[in-house]
Length: 415
Image 1: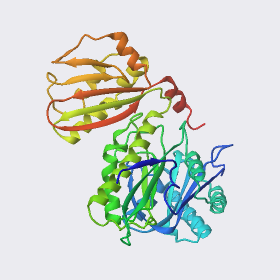
Image 2: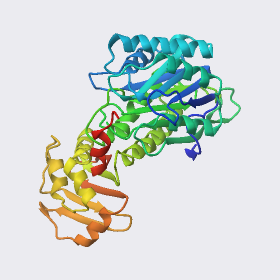
Image 3: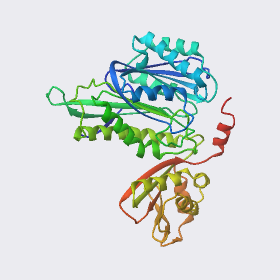
Image 4: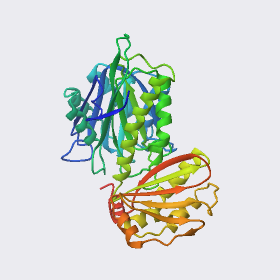
């Protein structure tokens, strides 16, 4: 009953179709709308931004998830966020869902929505409606359709982001085991500093699972995946993670916290982990992925806060970009994380693919090989770890370096 990585993304699971189109909402010469569809009604779980300024699609989706309604489709656009748009934005959500409902022959409240891009402008309903009509006629379950959809929702992303896995569960008819698939796509490159999950992420599965346990799995998984990445310290108005389950795999429905649930949860965690790390490495202007592992902490949440503090530090990010092994930056970030610990006992390390450097031990900075440290900092993936020597809990956070290009990208984002 192991989890196996497979090619694809949102169309990997049985019964899920996808499409995309060039609607001309903001971009020219590229696709900017995507659709996910299942003819079989789906149970849905979701988590949304903690930002007090919530985009209209977040409010629309949250009501559907909270009311435990079945869903059939997701419509996503890139370029304009439909955030800070007042009641007009909510009216547009309803009209967009009505267009999708009419095109697909499904209830209006079974359509989920997502938007990403510039905050403030109103979305053009005519372009959204035309895009929906195009996509409804080109839906496909091919792997290529899912990949194309993942590219359509990109903004400043440099690569599309999709992963899929398969595993087996007992069949509903008692005939043995059946294959279950789970795949997802996400976008996220800037405005990444979550307090729930982050960015836009859509995951599909043909697993049969109750709404309560699906929501539990989604809420739990974000804590050690999407909640543990940071690019720039900004939490978006549009952060959304949605997981749709249509049950077409034919497994015995998961209704209890048993071995089947744990396997499903692990599979969901695998896809969310890979998507989260890819988003951190694709941070705007990034040249390095930063990983910070905190272990032997007294409490899980303390380990999380310490790891996030290091990855979120602008000085640590700049240190990695400049390949300057100034471990004082990391010690400082640990110290202001708001967690009590004894600096005299912790140990701090820098890890490369083949070499490890001890930065700090017994209350003082160690003498270390500066050239070796600089060589490790030149690697694509830069990993730090800290032994807190206070317990048995651990957590890992991911981020990226801070480069000149980050300022260039965001200095003229609206244009």
